[in-house]
Image (tube, rainbow, N blue to C red):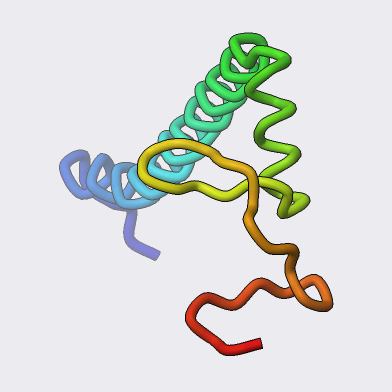
Length: 89
């Protein structure tokens, strides 16, 4: 068996270590993104007022609707839990 020369020896190491380094770099990036998103979500939760949370819950329940840049009480109740626009009842 022939031994690798010095120049070829380092090329072989780079061939193996390059992809391994790339995987570690990608993992580090993913961990960083997750941490940043968690911090942002926590900041949004802490910044939300009780009034805005109540408005969001009412919107999800279908009690209010978004009209002309603001929230207003729904004029008609949804039929069977489904609100359709433009359809005759």
